[in-house]
Length: 421
Image (cartoon, rainbow, N blue to C red; front, side):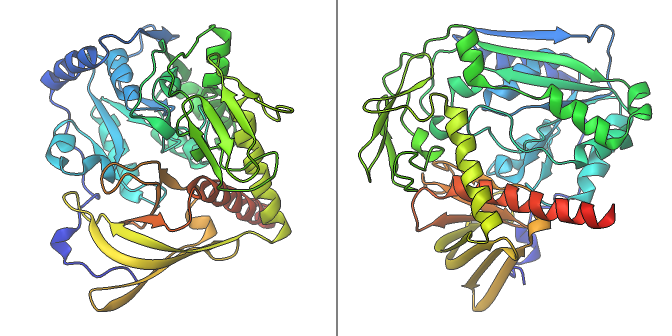
Protein backbone atom coordinates (compact mmCIF):
# COMPACT_ATOMS: atom_id res chain seq x y z
CA UNK A 1 0.00 0.00 0.00
CA UNK A 2 1.05 3.59 -0.62
CA UNK A 3 1.42 6.24 2.07
CA UNK A 4 -1.96 7.75 2.90
CA UNK A 5 -1.71 11.52 2.40
CA UNK A 6 -4.48 14.09 2.10
CA UNK A 7 -5.17 14.55 -1.61
CA UNK A 8 -4.21 18.24 -1.55
CA UNK A 9 -0.64 17.33 -0.61
CA UNK A 10 -0.01 15.57 -3.93
CA UNK A 11 1.17 17.44 -7.02
CA UNK A 12 -0.86 16.60 -10.08
CA UNK A 13 1.57 15.54 -12.78
CA UNK A 14 -1.22 14.41 -15.12
CA UNK A 15 -1.89 17.81 -16.63
CA UNK A 16 -0.87 19.47 -19.86
CA UNK A 17 1.97 22.02 -19.85
CA UNK A 18 1.26 25.58 -20.87
CA UNK A 19 2.68 26.85 -24.13
CA UNK A 20 5.86 28.71 -23.27
CA UNK A 21 5.23 32.48 -23.64
CA UNK A 22 7.26 33.77 -26.59
CA UNK A 23 8.87 36.53 -24.51
CA UNK A 24 10.34 33.86 -22.23
CA UNK A 25 12.46 32.44 -25.04
CA UNK A 26 14.35 35.74 -25.11
CA UNK A 27 14.59 35.94 -21.30
CA UNK A 28 15.86 32.34 -21.04
CA UNK A 29 18.43 33.07 -23.77
CA UNK A 30 19.66 36.16 -21.90
CA UNK A 31 19.85 34.35 -18.56
CA UNK A 32 21.68 31.43 -20.18
CA UNK A 33 24.21 33.85 -21.68
CA UNK A 34 24.75 35.41 -18.26
CA UNK A 35 25.17 32.01 -16.57
CA UNK A 36 27.77 31.02 -19.19
CA UNK A 37 29.93 34.11 -18.66
CA UNK A 38 33.48 32.97 -17.94
CA UNK A 39 32.86 29.51 -19.41
CA UNK A 40 34.38 28.78 -22.81
CA UNK A 41 31.57 27.21 -24.81
CA UNK A 42 30.44 26.38 -28.33
CA UNK A 43 27.10 25.19 -29.72
CA UNK A 44 27.45 23.54 -33.13
CA UNK A 45 24.53 22.61 -35.38
CA UNK A 46 24.90 19.68 -37.79
CA UNK A 47 22.44 18.85 -40.56
CA UNK A 48 19.82 21.23 -39.17
CA UNK A 49 19.63 23.63 -42.12
CA UNK A 50 16.02 24.59 -42.69
CA UNK A 51 14.71 22.56 -39.77
CA UNK A 52 11.78 24.24 -38.06
CA UNK A 53 9.68 23.09 -35.10
CA UNK A 54 7.97 20.85 -34.27
CA UNK A 55 10.71 18.38 -33.48
CA UNK A 56 12.00 16.32 -30.57
CA UNK A 57 15.32 16.86 -28.83
CA UNK A 58 16.94 13.88 -27.14
CA UNK A 59 19.88 15.07 -25.06
CA UNK A 60 22.53 13.51 -22.89
CA UNK A 61 22.60 14.73 -19.32
CA UNK A 62 25.68 15.65 -17.29
CA UNK A 63 25.08 18.88 -15.36
CA UNK A 64 22.66 21.80 -14.99
CA UNK A 65 24.62 23.71 -17.62
CA UNK A 66 23.07 21.32 -20.18
CA UNK A 67 19.85 23.36 -20.05
CA UNK A 68 21.68 26.65 -20.67
CA UNK A 69 23.58 25.37 -23.70
CA UNK A 70 20.48 23.75 -25.20
CA UNK A 71 18.62 27.05 -24.76
CA UNK A 72 21.26 28.82 -26.86
CA UNK A 73 20.81 26.26 -29.63
CA UNK A 74 17.00 26.38 -29.74
CA UNK A 75 16.48 30.16 -29.50
CA UNK A 76 14.08 31.73 -30.52
CA UNK A 77 11.77 28.68 -30.66
CA UNK A 78 9.49 27.65 -27.81
CA UNK A 79 10.72 24.62 -25.87
CA UNK A 80 8.99 22.40 -23.33
CA UNK A 81 11.34 20.36 -21.13
CA UNK A 82 10.49 17.12 -19.35
CA UNK A 83 11.54 17.66 -15.71
CA UNK A 84 11.55 15.40 -12.66
CA UNK A 85 9.40 16.49 -9.73
CA UNK A 86 12.38 17.38 -7.52
CA UNK A 87 13.14 20.12 -10.04
CA UNK A 88 9.79 21.64 -9.06
CA UNK A 89 10.70 21.72 -5.37
CA UNK A 90 9.62 25.10 -3.92
CA UNK A 91 9.23 26.59 -7.40
CA UNK A 92 6.36 24.82 -9.23
CA UNK A 93 5.02 28.17 -10.45
CA UNK A 94 8.33 28.91 -12.19
CA UNK A 95 8.61 25.51 -13.88
CA UNK A 96 4.97 25.65 -14.97
CA UNK A 97 5.48 29.20 -16.30
CA UNK A 98 8.35 28.11 -18.56
CA UNK A 99 6.34 25.15 -19.83
CA UNK A 100 7.91 22.32 -17.84
CA UNK A 101 6.40 18.85 -18.06
CA UNK A 102 6.51 17.24 -14.63
CA UNK A 103 7.09 13.51 -14.21
CA UNK A 104 8.52 11.06 -11.70
CA UNK A 105 11.64 9.20 -12.75
CA UNK A 106 11.52 5.58 -13.85
CA UNK A 107 7.76 5.19 -13.56
CA UNK A 108 5.11 4.37 -16.14
CA UNK A 109 3.66 7.80 -16.95
CA UNK A 110 1.03 7.51 -19.67
CA UNK A 111 0.05 11.16 -19.41
CA UNK A 112 3.63 12.16 -20.24
CA UNK A 113 3.08 10.75 -23.74
CA UNK A 114 -0.08 12.85 -24.08
CA UNK A 115 1.79 15.96 -22.97
CA UNK A 116 4.57 15.32 -25.47
CA UNK A 117 2.02 14.94 -28.25
CA UNK A 118 0.33 18.18 -27.14
CA UNK A 119 3.60 20.14 -27.30
CA UNK A 120 4.43 18.86 -30.77
CA UNK A 121 0.89 19.48 -32.05
CA UNK A 122 1.33 23.15 -31.08
CA UNK A 123 4.35 23.33 -33.37
CA UNK A 124 6.95 23.59 -30.60
CA UNK A 125 10.09 21.71 -29.50
CA UNK A 126 9.97 18.90 -26.98
CA UNK A 127 13.22 18.37 -25.08
CA UNK A 128 13.83 15.30 -22.96
CA UNK A 129 16.83 13.63 -21.36
CA UNK A 130 16.34 9.87 -21.91
CA UNK A 131 19.08 8.89 -19.46
CA UNK A 132 16.88 10.59 -16.84
CA UNK A 133 19.81 11.43 -14.56
CA UNK A 134 23.21 13.05 -14.61
CA UNK A 135 25.90 10.76 -15.99
CA UNK A 136 27.88 9.24 -13.08
CA UNK A 137 31.10 8.63 -15.03
CA UNK A 138 30.88 10.97 -18.01
CA UNK A 139 29.77 8.19 -20.38
CA UNK A 140 26.47 7.13 -21.91
CA UNK A 141 24.03 5.76 -19.33
CA UNK A 142 21.12 3.34 -19.72
CA UNK A 143 18.34 4.32 -22.12
CA UNK A 144 15.03 2.41 -22.39
CA UNK A 145 13.85 0.65 -25.55
CA UNK A 146 10.59 2.61 -25.29
CA UNK A 147 12.35 5.58 -26.91
CA UNK A 148 12.01 4.07 -30.36
CA UNK A 149 8.30 3.47 -29.84
CA UNK A 150 7.82 7.07 -28.67
CA UNK A 151 9.61 8.47 -31.71
CA UNK A 152 7.58 6.18 -33.98
CA UNK A 153 4.38 7.48 -32.40
CA UNK A 154 5.21 11.19 -32.69
CA UNK A 155 6.36 11.19 -36.35
CA UNK A 156 8.41 14.40 -36.11
CA UNK A 157 12.13 15.01 -36.75
CA UNK A 158 14.52 14.03 -33.99
CA UNK A 159 17.59 16.01 -32.97
CA UNK A 160 20.33 14.52 -30.82
CA UNK A 161 22.04 16.98 -28.49
CA UNK A 162 25.37 15.80 -27.10
CA UNK A 163 27.17 17.90 -24.52
CA UNK A 164 30.90 17.37 -24.03
CA UNK A 165 32.90 18.80 -21.16
CA UNK A 166 29.87 19.44 -18.94
CA UNK A 167 30.65 16.42 -16.75
CA UNK A 168 34.30 17.41 -16.41
CA UNK A 169 33.20 20.94 -15.52
CA UNK A 170 30.79 19.81 -12.78
CA UNK A 171 30.97 16.04 -12.16
CA UNK A 172 27.87 14.53 -10.61
CA UNK A 173 29.90 13.29 -7.63
CA UNK A 174 31.23 16.80 -6.83
CA UNK A 175 28.97 19.27 -8.62
CA UNK A 176 29.59 22.12 -6.18
CA UNK A 177 33.28 22.55 -7.06
CA UNK A 178 33.46 23.59 -10.70
CA UNK A 179 36.48 23.14 -12.98
CA UNK A 180 37.65 25.24 -15.92
CA UNK A 181 36.82 23.09 -18.96
CA UNK A 182 35.80 24.13 -22.49
CA UNK A 183 32.21 23.06 -23.23
CA UNK A 184 31.20 21.79 -26.69
CA UNK A 185 27.60 21.00 -27.59
CA UNK A 186 26.52 19.45 -30.89
CA UNK A 187 22.94 19.49 -32.18
CA UNK A 188 22.47 16.91 -34.93
CA UNK A 189 19.35 15.99 -36.88
CA UNK A 190 19.37 12.19 -36.77
CA UNK A 191 15.88 11.26 -37.98
CA UNK A 192 13.34 12.64 -40.44
CA UNK A 193 9.64 11.72 -40.49
CA UNK A 194 10.24 9.75 -43.69
CA UNK A 195 12.99 7.68 -42.04
CA UNK A 196 10.88 7.13 -38.93
CA UNK A 197 8.07 5.71 -41.09
CA UNK A 198 10.38 3.13 -42.73
CA UNK A 199 12.51 2.07 -39.73
CA UNK A 200 11.46 -0.47 -37.11
CA UNK A 201 11.37 0.40 -33.41
CA UNK A 202 14.56 -1.62 -32.89
CA UNK A 203 16.28 0.27 -35.72
CA UNK A 204 15.13 3.59 -34.28
CA UNK A 205 16.55 2.66 -30.89
CA UNK A 206 19.84 1.72 -32.51
CA UNK A 207 20.01 5.07 -34.31
CA UNK A 208 19.16 7.02 -31.14
CA UNK A 209 21.55 5.21 -28.82
CA UNK A 210 24.32 5.44 -31.41
CA UNK A 211 23.82 9.20 -31.74
CA UNK A 212 23.96 9.72 -27.97
CA UNK A 213 27.28 8.00 -27.35
CA UNK A 214 29.80 10.13 -25.47
CA UNK A 215 32.85 9.81 -23.23
CA UNK A 216 34.00 12.97 -21.46
CA UNK A 217 37.35 11.46 -20.50
CA UNK A 218 38.04 10.70 -24.16
CA UNK A 219 36.98 14.26 -24.98
CA UNK A 220 39.52 15.48 -22.41
CA UNK A 221 42.26 13.28 -23.85
CA UNK A 222 41.60 14.14 -27.49
CA UNK A 223 41.56 17.88 -26.79
CA UNK A 224 44.54 17.95 -24.44
CA UNK A 225 42.47 19.41 -21.60
CA UNK A 226 44.28 19.69 -18.27
CA UNK A 227 42.26 19.96 -15.06
CA UNK A 228 44.63 21.50 -12.54
CA UNK A 229 42.24 22.16 -9.66
CA UNK A 230 43.68 20.68 -6.45
CA UNK A 231 40.29 19.15 -5.51
CA UNK A 232 39.76 17.33 -8.80
CA UNK A 233 39.44 13.83 -7.25
CA UNK A 234 37.29 14.74 -4.24
CA UNK A 235 34.07 12.72 -4.36
CA UNK A 236 35.11 10.30 -7.09
CA UNK A 237 35.01 7.43 -4.59
CA UNK A 238 31.22 7.70 -4.77
CA UNK A 239 31.29 6.10 -8.23
CA UNK A 240 34.55 4.13 -7.79
CA UNK A 241 33.36 2.39 -4.64
CA UNK A 242 35.10 -1.00 -5.06
CA UNK A 243 38.84 -1.47 -4.67
CA UNK A 244 40.33 -3.45 -7.59
CA UNK A 245 43.33 -4.39 -5.45
CA UNK A 246 41.64 -6.01 -2.42
CA UNK A 247 38.08 -6.20 -3.87
CA UNK A 248 36.59 -4.53 -0.77
CA UNK A 249 33.43 -2.49 -1.38
CA UNK A 250 32.40 0.85 0.12
CA UNK A 251 35.78 1.53 1.76
CA UNK A 252 37.10 3.80 -0.98
CA UNK A 253 37.66 7.47 -0.17
CA UNK A 254 39.13 10.54 -1.84
CA UNK A 255 40.88 13.74 -0.92
CA UNK A 256 42.47 16.43 -3.06
CA UNK A 257 43.84 14.67 -6.15
CA UNK A 258 43.96 11.20 -4.53
CA UNK A 259 41.63 8.21 -4.52
CA UNK A 260 42.44 5.56 -1.91
CA UNK A 261 41.20 2.38 -0.22
CA UNK A 262 40.79 2.59 3.54
CA UNK A 263 40.97 -1.21 3.78
CA UNK A 264 44.25 -2.11 2.00
CA UNK A 265 45.76 1.37 1.78
CA UNK A 266 46.36 1.42 -1.95
CA UNK A 267 46.00 4.85 -3.57
CA UNK A 268 45.74 6.36 -7.03
CA UNK A 269 46.19 9.88 -8.36
CA UNK A 270 43.67 11.46 -10.70
CA UNK A 271 46.13 13.24 -12.94
CA UNK A 272 45.60 16.56 -14.70
CA UNK A 273 44.89 14.79 -18.00
CA UNK A 274 42.10 12.71 -16.43
CA UNK A 275 43.90 9.38 -16.14
CA UNK A 276 44.40 7.34 -12.97
CA UNK A 277 47.88 6.31 -11.81
CA UNK A 278 48.59 4.01 -8.87
CA UNK A 279 51.08 5.50 -6.44
CA UNK A 280 52.49 2.04 -5.70
CA UNK A 281 52.27 -1.15 -7.74
CA UNK A 282 50.31 -1.68 -10.94
CA UNK A 283 47.53 0.58 -12.18
CA UNK A 284 44.51 -1.68 -12.58
CA UNK A 285 42.48 0.91 -14.48
CA UNK A 286 43.98 4.05 -15.97
CA UNK A 287 40.57 5.30 -17.14
CA UNK A 288 37.70 6.17 -14.80
CA UNK A 289 35.01 4.70 -17.15
CA UNK A 290 36.89 1.37 -17.28
CA UNK A 291 36.91 1.09 -13.47
CA UNK A 292 33.24 2.10 -13.42
CA UNK A 293 32.23 -0.56 -15.98
CA UNK A 294 34.31 -3.21 -14.16
CA UNK A 295 32.17 -2.56 -11.09
CA UNK A 296 29.05 -3.09 -13.21
CA UNK A 297 30.45 -6.43 -14.40
CA UNK A 298 31.13 -7.43 -10.79
CA UNK A 299 27.49 -6.73 -9.90
CA UNK A 300 26.31 -8.65 -12.97
CA UNK A 301 28.31 -11.66 -11.85
CA UNK A 302 26.68 -11.53 -8.42
CA UNK A 303 23.22 -11.44 -9.99
CA UNK A 304 23.99 -14.32 -12.35
CA UNK A 305 25.40 -16.36 -9.45
CA UNK A 306 22.30 -15.66 -7.35
CA UNK A 307 24.32 -14.06 -4.55
CA UNK A 308 23.17 -10.46 -4.91
CA UNK A 309 20.88 -9.00 -2.25
CA UNK A 310 20.63 -5.80 -0.25
CA UNK A 311 18.94 -5.05 3.08
CA UNK A 312 19.34 -1.87 5.05
CA UNK A 313 17.63 0.51 7.44
CA UNK A 314 16.98 3.81 5.71
CA UNK A 315 15.72 7.28 6.61
CA UNK A 316 12.82 8.06 4.31
CA UNK A 317 11.55 11.41 3.05
CA UNK A 318 8.77 11.54 0.49
CA UNK A 319 7.84 14.24 -2.00
CA UNK A 320 4.13 13.90 -2.77
CA UNK A 321 3.91 17.57 -3.74
CA UNK A 322 6.40 20.35 -4.45
CA UNK A 323 6.68 22.33 -1.24
CA UNK A 324 7.81 19.95 1.45
CA UNK A 325 9.70 16.69 1.88
CA UNK A 326 7.65 14.65 4.34
CA UNK A 327 9.86 12.85 6.92
CA UNK A 328 8.56 9.29 7.22
CA UNK A 329 11.15 8.09 9.73
CA UNK A 330 13.00 4.79 9.61
CA UNK A 331 12.09 1.99 7.22
CA UNK A 332 13.56 -1.24 5.87
CA UNK A 333 14.68 -1.37 2.25
CA UNK A 334 15.43 -4.63 0.46
CA UNK A 335 16.51 -5.30 -3.10
CA UNK A 336 17.07 -8.56 -4.95
CA UNK A 337 16.74 -10.10 -8.39
CA UNK A 338 13.34 -11.70 -7.79
CA UNK A 339 11.28 -9.14 -5.88
CA UNK A 340 13.00 -5.91 -6.87
CA UNK A 341 12.75 -3.09 -4.33
CA UNK A 342 10.55 -3.37 -1.25
CA UNK A 343 10.32 -0.46 1.19
CA UNK A 344 8.50 -1.22 4.45
CA UNK A 345 7.82 1.41 7.08
CA UNK A 346 5.31 2.93 9.47
CA UNK A 347 3.89 6.44 9.19
CA UNK A 348 1.04 8.30 10.84
CA UNK A 349 -0.30 5.22 12.59
CA UNK A 350 -0.24 2.96 9.53
CA UNK A 351 2.17 0.46 8.03
CA UNK A 352 3.08 1.01 4.40
CA UNK A 353 4.84 -1.07 1.77
CA UNK A 354 6.18 0.18 -1.54
CA UNK A 355 7.31 -2.39 -4.08
CA UNK A 356 8.88 -1.86 -7.48
CA UNK A 357 9.25 -5.20 -9.22
CA UNK A 358 12.24 -5.82 -11.53
CA UNK A 359 10.34 -5.01 -14.73
CA UNK A 360 8.72 -1.91 -13.18
CA UNK A 361 11.98 0.01 -12.72
CA UNK A 362 14.62 -0.06 -15.46
CA UNK A 363 17.08 2.27 -13.74
CA UNK A 364 17.53 4.02 -10.42
CA UNK A 365 17.58 7.69 -9.51
CA UNK A 366 20.48 8.26 -7.12
CA UNK A 367 21.79 11.52 -5.70
CA UNK A 368 25.20 12.34 -4.28
CA UNK A 369 25.09 14.98 -1.51
CA UNK A 370 21.43 15.67 -2.25
CA UNK A 371 20.95 19.38 -1.45
CA UNK A 372 17.20 19.50 -0.79
CA UNK A 373 17.07 17.40 2.39
CA UNK A 374 20.53 16.73 3.84
CA UNK A 375 23.86 16.64 1.99
CA UNK A 376 24.28 12.85 1.92
CA UNK A 377 23.88 10.17 -0.74
CA UNK A 378 20.39 8.83 -1.30
CA UNK A 379 18.22 6.94 -3.77
CA UNK A 380 14.73 7.70 -4.97
CA UNK A 381 12.07 5.04 -5.47
CA UNK A 382 9.06 6.61 -7.14
CA UNK A 383 5.51 5.49 -7.71
CA UNK A 384 3.08 7.19 -10.06
CA UNK A 385 2.05 9.72 -7.37
CA UNK A 386 4.92 9.85 -4.84
CA UNK A 387 8.70 9.78 -4.61
CA UNK A 388 10.54 8.20 -1.66
CA UNK A 389 14.06 9.49 -1.00
CA UNK A 390 15.91 6.87 1.04
CA UNK A 391 19.12 7.59 2.95
CA UNK A 392 20.93 4.28 3.61
CA UNK A 393 22.64 3.48 6.89
CA UNK A 394 25.35 1.64 4.96
CA UNK A 395 27.92 3.94 3.40
CA UNK A 396 28.64 4.41 -0.29
CA UNK A 397 26.15 1.88 -1.66
CA UNK A 398 23.88 3.85 -4.01
CA UNK A 399 26.05 3.40 -7.12
CA UNK A 400 26.02 -0.38 -6.70
CA UNK A 401 22.24 -0.29 -6.26
CA UNK A 402 21.96 1.63 -9.53
CA UNK A 403 24.05 -0.99 -11.32
CA UNK A 404 21.99 -3.80 -9.82
CA UNK A 405 18.69 -2.18 -10.82
CA UNK A 406 19.72 -1.92 -14.45
CA UNK A 407 21.24 -5.39 -14.61
CA UNK A 408 18.25 -7.05 -12.94
CA UNK A 409 15.87 -5.25 -15.32
CA UNK A 410 17.89 -6.35 -18.35
CA UNK A 411 17.94 -9.94 -17.12
CA UNK A 412 14.15 -10.09 -16.70
CA UNK A 413 13.52 -8.12 -19.89
CA UNK A 414 15.62 -10.55 -21.94
CA UNK A 415 13.77 -13.50 -20.40
CA UNK A 416 10.41 -12.00 -21.34
CA UNK A 417 11.56 -11.33 -24.92
CA UNK A 418 12.86 -14.88 -25.29
CA UNK A 419 9.51 -16.31 -24.13
CA UNK A 420 7.50 -14.13 -26.50
CA UNK A 421 9.75 -14.53 -29.56
